[in-house]
Image (cartoon, rainbow, N blue to C red; front, side, top):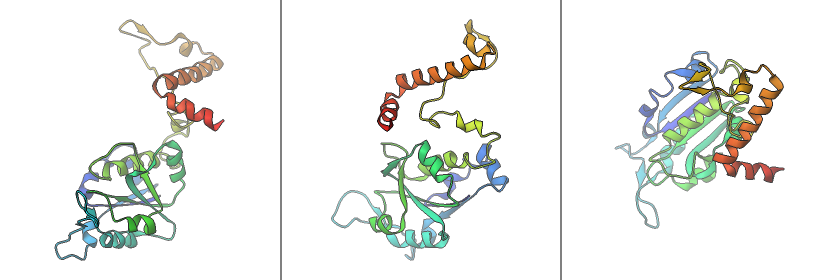
Length: 228
């Protein structure tokens, strides 16, 4: 997968993907990530990328010209252009799975009060939010998307099971996990997990996943019932 990030602050990405799983994926040529400064595409002599909104209002809006040139500079025939914005559909595991099938993703990070809507209407394929709150820009949401999608690419994780049983992959939150020692501060690991009875262990995992989801995220249970 090829990923191009269009941003006013490419330096924000310098450390986040220089370690761990995504770095390994890049080193193994499973994915590539390139960052492009939108200011470099401004025709303004001062490299200005924002202006006052028509109709009045607080703040500034990113101008269409530098964004358009930035998109055109990296876009391929099979590219999917994604704008990170709180106005988009809320990112989840299903969207991550969907995007992991793409060959080329262009991620546009907005700032200020957003971008000229002509860009969204005519040059963006999808608008994605990472939650119902506002951040200072689209860089952190872009990092979330890259990390979530990147780890799903074939060959990135050591085993397909590494993500198939994780929280949200099958709709429910993941069951509780335990490791050694068997007793910690007088608290024991659930007996069933060391019983060796694989059928009972699987039943326990499913039950605990359902209980945890009902307790912490009852909204997920409602959504699953609606799908049924």
